[in-house]
Image (cartoon, rainbow, N blue to C red; front, side, top):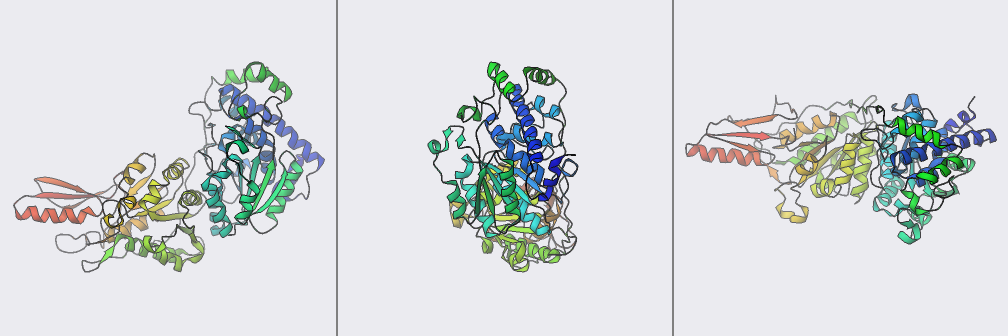
Length: 563
């Protein structure tokens, strides 16, 4: 019987000698697989993989995760923020049966392999793909918020590197977690004091414990190679209130003498005699490596398919605005959001809607939702980088997640975070106001005219630019139930309601929003005007002027420029 099974869910009060022996052997094998994986690929990050290994082995033993529940909603979530240690985490997952090690280490970093150089959701057991450093804590905050909104007892674990602690997005995420009192979130930092350019004090000096304490976190320090100390710290964190960070003192390249505490091995694979020495010290040999090289020529393994959740929501009855109504698209969005929110707020069986704001609630019109659904409204302050990731991760963990911001903040400023939301197959709803040419009063710093092009650069984002308040209302309700990442973009001004020739609302009763449709607003035979967004009303005005001169122009409206 596996002695570490008693560690699951922290049933064991202490780590026994038998548990320690089992974890030590798993870590030894994991280090062998990590070295072989990086050396077979002739690239990778063996130093961090080896230093984090004991953290990974302890975490996977204790957290509520298992191979047969890797896609289950009610389970713990683990985020690896220093995603370049992928060889180490993949090896740890293999040690716990998420897949076979022979499937992983020969195929590490191969083109089209799921076992990419930075952790990816294609691999069972990986909950978030972290590209550049500093992303993981924000993703963990999103998972923890979604679990809380679902009423789940699951926990979120984030493992980070020490070099990324200076990044601004990490500070933003720390503050959001502390403000929201996320007792279900615990962070472990691999503190080996080395990053790619050298020792931390040489690259950018930082007082890591002081940073976390300043933002209201409880700090525990431990030996990152002591299974009992890591486990005790984790158990303390989950049995006490407050946000906890565990600073694990480790040795870069642990287990391989010539790699230990050498910055070069942050991102340098061993080769030749050095590789043979490394494998011998870890209790293996070159024969295993040669077999891996041969297997590397074989068929690629298949990754898992990430399935997005389909929300269960009552989207209510659309509001129809008439030609007498003076309304901006922002206001129509805000009213529809508040109505849908109130219909589903804390209703059993409904998917929770979480709305995020960065100190713009009144301007982006999410203030009505905040009043109707206060527990599901997250005020993040002026911290857009973390918020984009927090909201994205929450949408991948069982919540409908919406973030509203000005276009320059929600698209331009956080392009990489939105790109990672796409890569991670999230389902964030990003509502952008103050976009397009309808922002002149605020000046060029606030005029976002590149949002369509930015999202076109990604593989999966949908973009909706509604023509008037009626289409905005219906697009909002459609978007909230649609899996995948959706951007709803609009300007800031009051717009006329788009009317049919008989004076009734074009997008009123009987209209259903369908992504990708192009609407014929006016018929004509001499020319065509293709409009998008608030220009629809102007295009109709041009149609009428030309008609008076005997020129027949068809007017089309495309609300889905990427559809």
